[in-house]
Image 1 (spheres, rainbow, N blue to C red):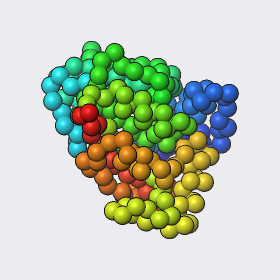
Image 2: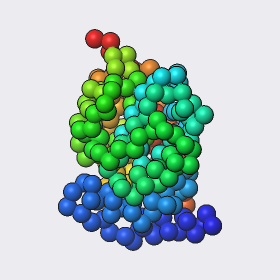
Image 3: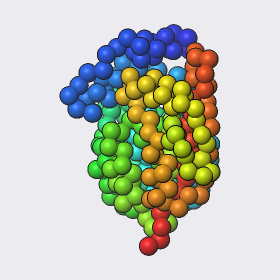
Image 4: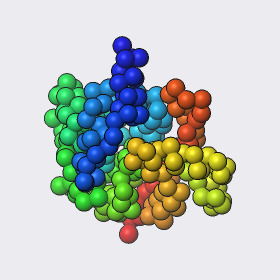
Length: 242
């Protein structure tokens, strides 16, 4: 069964053209045919998500915001803690992925989790948030600068911004950051670009300008059915108090 699901996903990744005049239409074109199989395949491709969720503080009454939350799979990593939160806002532009999230929410009976069809660059929740998360979504947002600035505005002073995503480094990264060879920097940007996933060496420098870094790790993770490991990073930063 898993092999059949994987084949369906791989077929869509390799053979189905992405169509649409807007970013939202292109996302739906890309995900509509694989939404029901999304979680199983991405579990082995999108590394570090559970670790990121577990690195974050969980306290009663918190407000969480996940930008580009897709199917809501990350909610499973904190399922037992969700009832104690004040609210969780799961924002995504893709109706087919949000439909999977809505079924997940209904199955768990989470009345405080709110799926929202909206743009991460402009959506503001109805209340300030304690934690904002981008989990493999920043690389799929063309104006990712706007998305980060928008999340920064939504956070309370002292709130946390958490990101896990694919990563390429600058040719000469700043001290404390890992270097990557030219072939890897070129290959991963070209390989992901076909699926409208845009790796940028500017993610980490921009995050470090906006937030006070509390946790950073740069790693590599296995890519299903390929003999290679893609670079990714985990980042947690705190919004200044003033």
